[in-house]
Length: 246
Image (cartoon, rainbow, N blue to C red; front, side):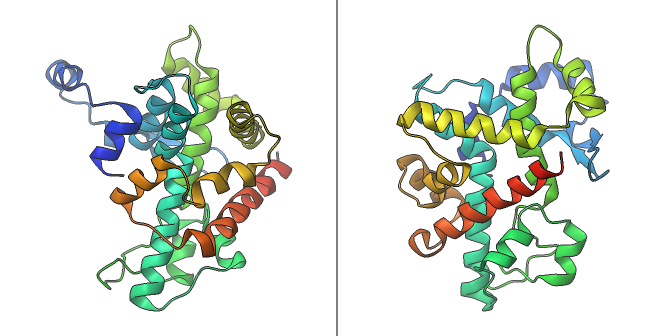
């Protein structure tokens, strides 16, 4: 996601702190830090994960509101879901490949990047093939969105590195249920209505929130009316599948 969207959802980068770390520990490059994700045994780098956790910790100009919750989600799972929809729309418009169907959407959410390369061809808005394209929502992006919510809920007085160590050693199991419960609980709190994970996701993929409209100016858009419900439904189905395996 571009820098402007990150500033809105997670706050501006603390350049002073970045300069301090660079000066005191020039050997550290955050993009070189890798964590082995236990379910897939793939390595993930921490910058996306850290940015998503930071969005959950950061309070916007409207703290403790539905607006702030929307911004939190847009920096993580909801933002990636919208970006995924935009990638599907670009591919349809520029390359003629129509992946707007339940089977492809379900498969592409959280797909292994290698599997995506063999089965799908994505195009950008200029008609160019996207190298290693997986629709912008492969396993690495998907699982970091899930883990960010669980890690955020686990933060307490313990140092964050201890929380992360414990999480990836033993506490990760049950993360899909925790993710769904958190998202649904927050949505119900602000709407006052019972809902499902699909309902909560559809709030974003329908494109009705002002935050979504502003966010989509940065990442692109898709036909919300035609495909929004389908994307939300398959996202919920994929979470449900992994919940059933826990």
